[in-house]
Length: 298
Image 1 (cartoon, one colour):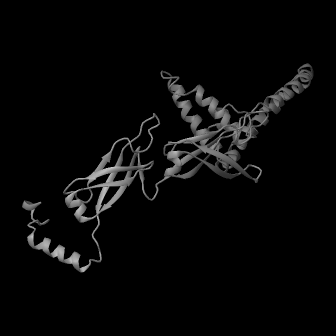
Image 2 (cartoon, rainbow, N blue to C red):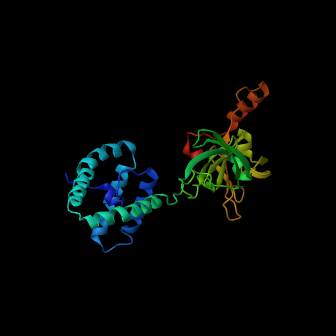
Image 3 (cartoon, helix red, strand yellow):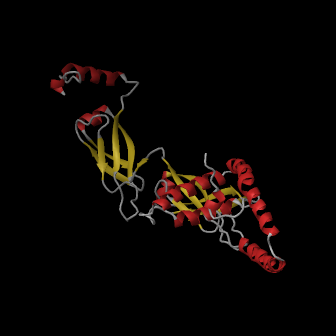
């Protein structure tokens, strides 16, 4: 197998680099050799694959440690040997030159290593109830900071926020280094269905239980929507699982409008009938020609 110098591929001269420095080097090289920018360059496409492979190996601690053992034997020791050979052929004047300007170069390199490094972003999530998401609310989030202490954040949930949307808190991520900006905190919102309503896109689904005689004869009912009570009409002959759609009474669409309120009908049978009710059902059974098992009478 051909050995690849992953540090050289990422533009790094040493393996003594932090995870942040590896990530920064990866971003720089990936941007430079991205196939979308170098569409006609086959070399760039192969280089981009090597860059991704190098980042995958060096960004994980366990694979980096294994790779470093090979890298030291194949690259670092070879560089040391080459430098030793070069020093044996350096003239006294060149040696004095290297001593003077080498110290200057070392100071420049140290200065370069102190370049600002932005902090990493933090992703987390929070669950809110459906009504809280609809009307908006304030939430408190407690996370463990880098120093191990617990940190509290006040989060304002805007009215009508959608499932999976993220709220960004600027500068509340991991701290930057050498004057770099702090990362951001991203909070993903998960909306929990309530007892009365279920969210599907921007529609709200609810169950309505009615009696057999309301289903048979029809009935006007007043039921609660998420904001107020509304009046609906149950048509004659309504069946279980029928749906009634009320436009504009659903969830907010983010553009000033609303989805639909979809009402699913459930016909509930009484479990304990009084004697008079039993007699009425017996009379109905005697005079009715309806049979749900006979397609002709449906």
